[in-house]
Image (tube, rainbow, N blue to C red; front, side):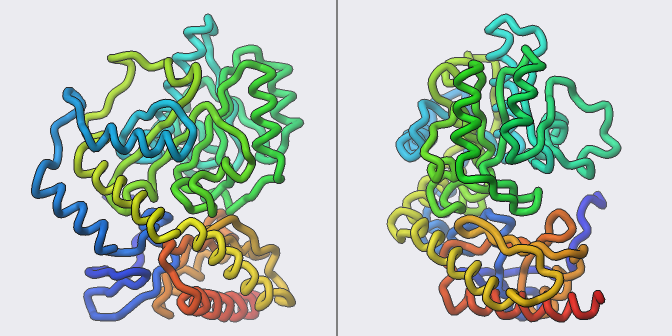
Amino acid sequence: MNTYARLPVTFVRGEGVWLWDDQGERYLDALSGVAVCGLGHCHPRLAKAICEQAGTLIHTSNLYHIKKQELLAERLIALSGMDNAFFCNSGAEANEAAIKLARLHGHNKGISLPTIIVMERSFHGRTMATLTASGNRKVQAGFEPLLSGFVRAPYNNLEAVAQVAANNKDVVAILVEPFQGEGGVNIPEAQYLQQLRSLCDQNGWLLMLDEVQSGIGRSGKWFAFQHSQIQPDVITLAKGLGGGVPIGACLARGVAAEVFKPGNHASTFGGNPLACAAALETLSVITDEHLIEHAAELGDFMRDRFRQQLADVAGVVQVRGQGLIVGIELAVPCVELVKKALDKRLLINVTSDKVVRLLPAFVMQRQEAEQVVNITCQLIKEFLIASK
């Protein structure tokens, strides 16, 4: 179906942070499959783990115990401080699980219309519930009627959330991204998540964090909430968890961990042996190669370089980010930079019309990062001059 405005390139091979197209041209990948391939392309350990599992057992279904699923749950719980995990296939499905969990939790408390506070400019997926939760009119347009049970507040604005609390007694949870990726690489105030945690504790709400893009090392820690030294009630994961193999997870703790009972929620493919083998090896490689520390250092390095090269360039609004997500906001729409970068054999992204977004693999080295910065800065300068 005509659902993608695809770029004019077909990739046939990858290695590390490089991709080759069907014409033999090599491209530097600064997007890593939109924050999916944290280990880069075809990491030998990940490829081996997938091949070995595929030759042993690919799928059985959740009618039976799955040892690697149990091992993966234990690993994620140890890293996150949560209590249990539900496995699915994508970030949207992980967020669907969280939304269902919050609603069931509300009904268990006797609330007939459980309501979740969500944020403007957020993005949680493209299913009916997750696009309703998203603060993005483009993904909602044409799919009305949207679902009830959501109330929206400005991102990074505690006062607005407190006002919702004062006026809506049906609220049961907050669903929020620790930083907004699709919304424009928006990084909140340092105390924002701590303040939301306090507000949830005061009102008996669940704090549910969408870490689909920010989790599994992307922020410079295993999970972005760890920068704020809080503990959420629910975390959703996907993207980087499987290193390229589709897998999502909804982690919960405390009262949230006890909400689902047999029959409340399920997934045919979720957490099958192949996906869990990929995720387990991804987590092991990140640990063994100290890639989270590297992601934090490389992200700081790239933002510093961008700020140096773009400091006096009219039309550059801000360079921002956390860990290995870099956002460069321009004063004018700049979607055409994606094609211009492709012509230079560089893969980048533009989100929210005006923000150049980079999501490099954790295995990228400084020399490659310098190439990304230099090419991107050159393109931005040329584009802004031409836009005057």
